[in-house]
Length: 414
Image 1 (tube, rainbow, N blue to C red):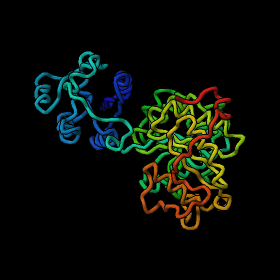
Image 2 (image 1 turned 180 degrees about the vertical axis):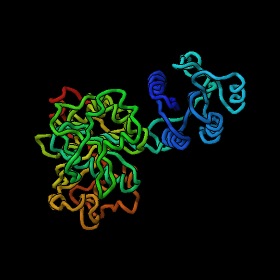
Image 3 (image 1 turned 90 degrees about the horizontal axis):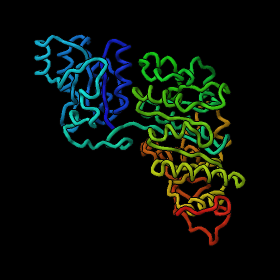
Image 4 (image 1 turned 90 degrees about the vertical axis):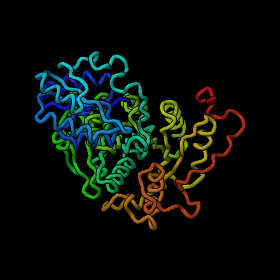
């Protein structure tokens, strides 16, 4: 996907041109070369910078862009937006400006209608969204078949660990139950995700966005809350607006989605680097869990990971293993033990308890290490096969005969 940066001191012009360019790639606004470099580092490359002619010190900015924004050894192309004296324009061409276009941007004039031939010079840019080689970005979606599976509990702890490690992480609560900030022990909020109902909320400046967040003091995790029971669901577009607004400034984002296969999940799944389905081991919930897992796997097979939460003994994991085998679902399977004692201690999050003394802490850290967000010293491996061990095991062969899965869903995956 192509990446563009627009620089303009006029907010109205900026919004109009961002909207035009968004049909052709990902668009970011920037107010300094440093912010442009941050976009390049996060996205892996920048294809073009569109610089308004009303920006002060244009030539100096153009020169800095040429020095600092490089992808695969080539500078990002710089286009001017507006009008300029021909003599001054000639000097800017020498400094590295590729062309000048009118306001609003005309896609034809910069080759956007031809799949960016003037931007790429027919060169294929080898960048794949979500891979470590292309970006440091981590966007993790948490979902569950039903309420009470532990989705919010695990998502908040995951965000806290990332924040503690990196100093920069955001949790977006897109579950209308609105429990995320309460799980972190935060007692009040003033703003919420409903502030992102309108599409232009994607363009809010960083100061405005930060003012909408609350902070978990122990870890430094920032939280965009959801208002408790004010919606029957969080609209998909609202969740997307929030994600795209904060993604300009946060490289690590955890999204706590509402239970079930929701429109918000369908909208956000393509942005995600990882998708976590949290379910319970109880037999009477197995059918619902498998139905959810099947849909998630069909939607994003390479991103899905399954966590069975609240395991009391290893035998409880066997039915879901059989189900995954029967439907040929190859998503990694982990588990977390039942942990009443850990959650009875409200002084700190269970994941931050001493791993040697807490099986739950040890197993959750091991799961996070598998996601690539925990360093090795924080993940203490399980020495013995204890209940709830999150080590991924060989999946045993499914029993002969169709069983309840075929009866329930009428098929077995090919």
